[in-house]
Amino acid sequence: MASAQELSDFLSSIEQRAFKQAVYAVRDDDAALDIVQDAMIKLAEKYSDRPAGELPLVFTRILQNRIHDWFRRQKVRNAWVTLFSSMGKKSEENDDFDPLEQLSAPDDSQIHQDGSQKMEQSQLLQALESEISKLPVRQREAFLMRYWDELSITDTAKAMNCSEGSVKTHCSRATQSLAKALKLKGITL
Amino acid sequence: MNRAKHDNLTSTEADRFGRASAALLRQGVQNLPANIKDRLYAARMKALSVSKAQKVPVHSNVLATHAGNWSSHSSPLWDSVRWAAPVAFLVLGLYGIAQWQQDSRINDIAQVDAALLTDDVPPDAYADSGFLSFLKNGPLSDSDSDSDSLDPSHR
Image 1: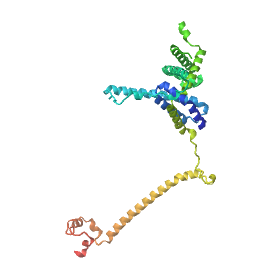
Image 2: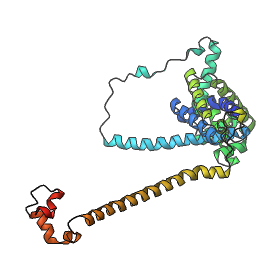
Image 3: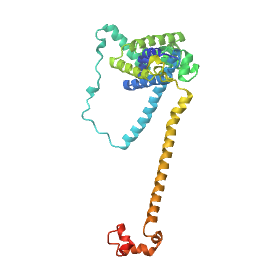
Image 4: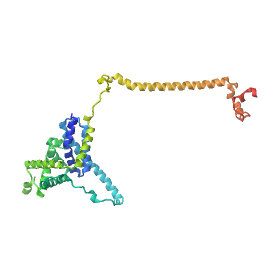
């Protein structure tokens, strides 16, 4: 059974990675934060009595399920919104809405760091994240679990509830797609 | 066909590409905005507060005296008494109330019987419809309806 300290250390080690993975999937920071929080609470509530070694796999599976649940809810919500918007008149325009208020201020924490190298790395990362977001869901899941979470093919197959052969196929296709897309942008890793 | 084959990465190359991508992604995670990190920290604290590991199981209530010598270890007998006593008290209370109500009802009836038997008017008179209509419509009905008006000596 994982101790409270082990659980805390584990959550601390994966929370940021889990957030980014959720962002790649749902493309919304707030929704991604909600998903990660739900997944962490679920893990702590239901599975914290598991051995510490099992936590990564269990958490990965919970996170993926939460992301899938989010897409299901969005699908239902969009269906209702579409229905009502087509039945009713156009929603009233909000005169107070200012698009400038929606723009987030740039993060100043990187200003004092090495300029050109940081910029290059940032662009590289941005391009990679953009292409990862465009991958089909299963390919993205397999790619991130295999290389970022460093799960074995067997564990990835368990987390994705599919065969090991499928994991290899998804992973291979994801890698090929990403490499091609980055190559078109003149990027090689 | 050949071009497509040439563009595809070999297994080793694909593996290397995957690891390089993961390394880049890991570096990117370090630069998350502070507000996101704060919210993730708050989420982690919330999760830890509900974890099973935080909940210490309590097997018995221990009094904080003399290093726990007066611990109230719960025996099966004590456990059964603890919930049976209030139930027994409730049942006895209900039985007592029922008895008291029955006694008071009997007393009321006895008082009425005694009043009828000790009255100057015989009890049979109250069963006579003529007497009742006399009481209702007769000259005594308008006067004070105290017990003296029924006294035969006043007639």
